[in-house]
Structure formats: structure tokens, C-alpha cells
Image 1 (cartoon, rainbow, N blue to C red):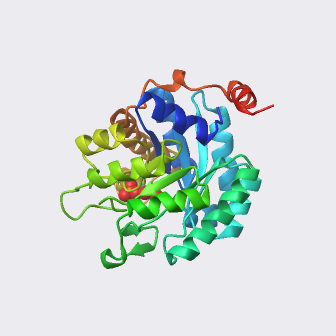
Image 2 (cartoon, rainbow, N blue to C red):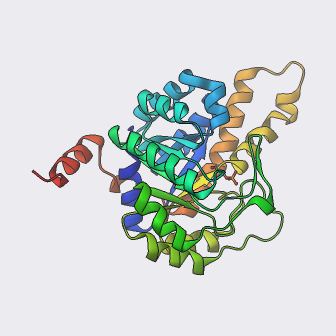
Amino acid sequence: MLTSTRELLETARRHIYAIGAFNVYNLEGTRAVVLAAEACQSPAMLQLHPSSFKFGGSPLVALCLEAARQASVPISVHLDHSVAAEAIQFALDAGMNSVMADGSHLPYAENLAFTRQMSELAHQYGAVVEAEIGRISGTEDGLSVAEKAAKMTDPIEAKAFVAATQVDSLAVTIGNVHGEYKSEPKLDFQRLIQIRQNVGENVLLVLHGASGLPAELISRSIQLGVCKFNVNTEVRQAYMRMLRSERCAASNADLIPCMTDSITAMQQVILDKMQLFGSAHKAHLHQTPAAALLTNALRRPA
Ligand code: 13P
């Protein structure tokens, strides 16, 4: 079921678990997410990083949307880390459920202006907007942020930022990084508590860089209000490992068995994350798209 990101995240937050948002690049990745979600009856998000979005274009977006529609569990489709207004407009026109307007590379005032504009645009489509202040370090799909350019989220700035931009969700930087953790991961939960208090109950909190985070940090983050984790590296590594395996690397290898094996490899990682995030066996808690429409209509003032 193609489901709104708002419904997925609000329900997860209410019941104290988190939705895994998995970066996908192609049919194999998309199928791995849907099969894992169906296998453990979990809601999930399919998300496209700007580089895979640029590479795959509208056929890839259509693939994700159709896979979500055909799934037996609730799934939404999200544009991750977009710095370009045109890409966000394109994603919204295509029917994607949410976008991340990422102005974190910009000076604060420009980040605010960009995010506010994208927030107004996305809300016209009923889509959820995620933003980032502070800046997460690490490397992903050719985008690299050096440690010295990274900056933790300032709880005071966060309060003013969400009020001015009216974003729905905020990606926090509290020690999380994209890619592999070079030393034991440590999250600044005191900072997370302050951010939660400052931004208010209506803002949904998101944590990027969930690959490599141990179970205790994941569960503490959920207890403190995180309801979406982004996962890319561990799934991508499972895929790449399979491509290098003897069976796939052989000169006479067939493609379909190799694709099937890589789906199975990614599916296992995704399944483990769904258990860790507490979203496994929670599909039944989510509303069908028709029921969600009705709830939204009832919520609206006459
Ligand atoms: P990892 O690659 O560290 O899992 O992070 C993914 C992410 O945050 C995508 O936005």
C-alpha cells in the first residue's frame, strides 16, 4: 500500500517505534525492502538519494511508487537530501510522499529561506518535509562532508528554525555520521532531549546514519522521540559483497540468479533493521490510505 509518510511516522511515534527509510538504487533494492517489510509485516520507506534519483530519473521513481502500491504493507516513497528546488518539484509532481529539503550546506539564513520555500511548496501537495540543521559528517554516494565542516544540531537554533520554516520533521545531528563509524558510535542524548523539548511535540525527529549504530543507541533514540532512521551503507555493502561473490563474479554468471541473491542478501540486513527499530509486526497499526484520508478530513476545521 502506498501510504503517506505522515501517517507512517505519526503512528510510529505514537506507538514508540521507528520507521526504517532505506536508500534504493534499482529494482533489486526496491524489491529487497518490500519483501523484507512483507516478511515481517513492517511499514517501511523507500528513499532515493539525489545521485540515484538523478541516475534513475522518472522510471526509478515510477518503480518505487508502483512497488509501494503493490505491497501488502504500508510503504511511502521519499526523496532524501535534496539541495535542488527542481528535483523537489519533480518528486512532488511524480507523487512522492515526502522530501528532504537539505539546506544544511548553506549559511543558517539561506538554509532557512530555502527550507521555508520548499516547505510551502511541499505542503501544497500534502507531502511531508524533512530538514536538517547542524551538519552530519561522512561520505555517501559521492557526497562527502569532512568532520571539521560537520556541526551538531543546536537546540536553540532548532526551535527557531522549525517555527520559521514549518517543516514536519527534523534530521538531528547528535554524533551520528553517514557511512561507517570510524570509532565506537556515541550519541549526545542530552542534546536530543533538549531538541525534543524545544521543537515541540508536532515535529517528527529523524536520525540519519543508522548503519552501524548498536541496539542500545537505537532504542534510546526511539524512547527520546526518533521515529525515522535512514539506512544506506549496510544494505549497499550487502549488495556489493554479493556482486563480488564467486557465483556473481564468474565470467559465465547469469544475471537473474545474481540479482536474486543480492535481493536476499539486502533483505536480511533490512529485516534485521526492522526488528531493531521495533517496526516488525506493526503494519496492522497503520491506517489504510482511504482511512487516513477520512481521518484528515475529520481533523480539518469546518
Ligand atoms: P548510512 O549510510 O550511514 O546508513 O546513512 C544513510 C543516510 O543517512 C541516508 O540519508
